[in-house]
Image 1: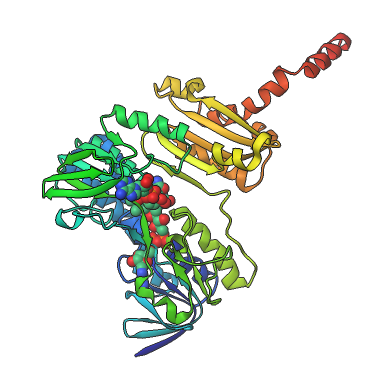
Image 2: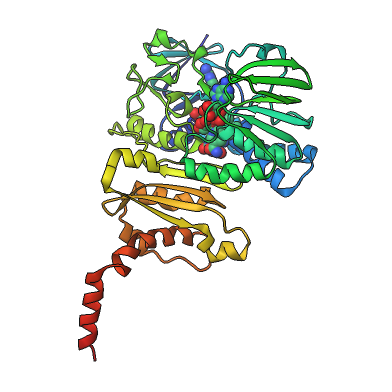
Length: 455
Ligand SMILES: Cc1cc2nc3c(=O)[nH]c(=O)nc-3n(C[C@H](O)[C@H](O)[C@H](O)COP(=O)(O)OP(=O)(O)OC[C@H]3O[C@@H](n4cnc5c(N)ncnc54)[C@H](O)[C@@H]3O)c2cc1C
Ligand SMILES: NC(=O)c1ccc[n+]([C@@H]2O[C@H](COP(=O)([O-])OP(=O)(O)OC[C@H]3O[C@@H](n4cnc5c(N)ncnc54)[C@H](O)[C@@H]3O)[C@@H](O)[C@H]2O)c1
């Protein structure tokens, strides 16, 4: 058995683990990084990158086989950035084995035992596959298999209308497949329903069947002829099946109990400081049981680096974390939705809207459909929801405003180039001041008074 002593041992080389490894080693810590499967984790191999590449291939009108080539090409182009070679070049000791705790202070990976001052669990999540009767009798895909699949589905059934289900629905529809989404509650149900409706209307107009309140209960059939029965008796038929009903944390191999690390079905239990019940062990990203996005794993990396390397107090917050679903049109959110803001702030809440129909650039490009909604309390934004072209880019403006607690006045003072799509943000901020300036008797009185005395 080899023995290694190090400052930091990171388990999992996905979005979270890689960010910590690169940051910590370049700031002078000794770092060991364990990866049992593919460097880059879910985001590069089975998640963000292939899904956005497949959506782009659909937009470009590529044939199915060419679309899969495009996906592989995107992964191959990014892979060197996440590779063993790059990280070893930075000075990280990479071990390509799964890690497992053997005591509160030691992890074993293959025939190496690592003792570290601090450990970080960054093992991510996997598709949750529910034990539906009949599912074991038909072939089905998850996000871990669908991108490699080279056979074009004639009619893809997708169970789950979350971001994975809806992005995959549109990508496959645009690649020429029939698509039915079977959603147990409401599709894109974590977003504001008014804005989700704008996206869903567009997806339905493209020919995607979206069945809501259709909880899949039983699966029947054979390869090429699959039937799904919902709890209310509706039956959906198709040739292929994608399961996209959420995630489960990757904790089974970790032997957490031997290290005194508490966990539940959402993942490793952590406080806001991302420390587990074993104080020398942190957890970040999908396995930490909160929001599951690459940028959250990256943000967690900064929080634990501050704590592990400098011993400074450091906490992860969630109120300023944005997300986006990359359908066309896109759907994006930061902070509170209207319903959440109403519940938290009641009568103090002001909701400001600006319709994309008023944006000159989008009118010029024939794409002026969408809506931005701002939730404002006492002159500061507490949330923003956007549905429309480039919503994922536009939400960055409000992510910055919330992260820095900016006032509406500071936002409205920003000058943006004309004509840009970003002006929807500025116009929404301006709409907050419209009644205060243009429908205000005091303002009119002051202007009238000043005008009498000006030369
Ligand atoms: C289809 C899909 C699309 C997505 N699109 C987006 C998007 O557009 N934007 C976005 O922000 N997020 C998106 N996500 C979510 C994003 O992929 C995850 O939030 C992100 O990858 C989480 O990073 P992580 O570091 O926590 O885990 P991962 O990136 O999954 O990395 C965990 C790594 O740990 C390894 N590992 C597991 N157990 C062990 C062990 N015991 N020892 C050693 N190694 C181990 C795994 O092999 C893996 O490589 C998407 C997810 C999916 C499935
Ligand atoms: N653009 C992005 O950032 C992006 C894209 C994809 C995934 N992700 C991340 O990955 C996570 C997982 O995505 P997801 O779409 O798998 O999960 P999800 O939890 O967001 O959505 C799953 C959906 O499946 C439905 N469902 C559950 N059981 C069902 C059943 N038996 N029959 C019918 N419907 C059922 C749920 O009601 C829910 O709407 C996301 O929450 C997100 O964090 C992000």
